Length: 229
Length: 354
Image (tube, rainbow over all chains, first blue to last red; front, side):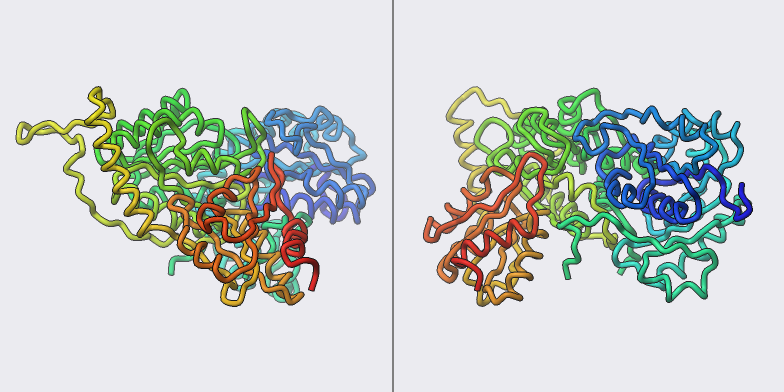
């Protein structure tokens, strides 16, 4: 850990669909403005549809190295892990962001690297939570998924990212309503809330109400996803 | 109104099925529908009397569906294009046995193993049978995660009402996209199920569920009877949504994900003063023939927007009796039509920009 409290390796894991990839990409871009060398590794071997690689352009433009399976976005449904991941974990000059696939099944891939990460010691394993996802709607359900992930990757979470959102329709109230939930997850696990992620346009409304707020920019837009009002 | 949650289309299908009283799910993983099975695997064991079973193949899964359907219980299976081809035999048997069941197809590019990206190229397969013999499937085509939930209730309801299999024709995009959804319980009607195999308890004659009829006279009679039912369905059950059709001179026809792209293009064209609207079929069989034929007397041209090589366009031409020209705006193989693609086709139908 450096003087600013930034760990060298930051791993994002959680229930799938919680918004891990968006948070990881935004965190990597933020990290780049504070650190010299930043790499982001996509370990998501579960879902071939939405990937870190979708954000390749913005990552490259900002000098963040992307490590992802050569099969990602290639239409080939092969769950292969990128070989360079080890290099990043071992190179002390690089700040690494690891985007892990959803649930325990996704976390299995992280288990492959847990020895190296634990040995290095300078890491943060962040649990991304979203109270508006149906299988993590309450604290009990969330803790169940948390335990499954920890078992699968042989590591313990060190922090929580509250990413409670309803996609495009998220309001400031939705975020505020999730604070209680996130606090309870934190209290019952003894793990601190490291940040609360909100989409860019809600940042000003909430910055004086929630600590460690992280603005999230969505870098990938599809023609079918444009607002249909 | 129930509190909103953020769900993938695939998850919404699974959750809605459980809410609709489906306690039996048989499936086999295939991208891009795997979340349906994964969600069922997590949730079904926690549902009282719920069964999740990953079969050894798609063929095994559909045959398990036939088994449960024979008992009159709600049952579902899901797959993606190549997997649906494997299930086709069982789907025909369901139709031949007059059994209700819900089948989900989260379409991907084809033919053959094709690709894993979204597509609508199973339109013919879904609407013209999806197996051998004289029969139809009810085919529902939602275009939002919320409508996925509604269509699961509708699908089970229509299947039981008419004693026939129903299919929800989704695609990779609809399955994977995440949207806020309100999990409202839909209507659950009680229909006569005296035909179901529930055990005679020695109190009645055994029911028989069967699709084998050696005597051609008998088989023909049954097929005629079934088509009488189909006629009623075509008369009464077609569902569609009209968008800006009141003064439209050009009518876009699109379903599922393609209708969302089309809507964006229509909004843009309207800003430019082009009078274009849309008829979005929500049921693909029965196809909203009457609405289209009526529109054909008002508009100058139709555009079929589809992620296939011109399949739905044939139904449009039939529905409007070829009264007006139908242009095709399509992408296929896993590519998605862009707003610009549709806009350019609107310009073409309009004879240029306004």
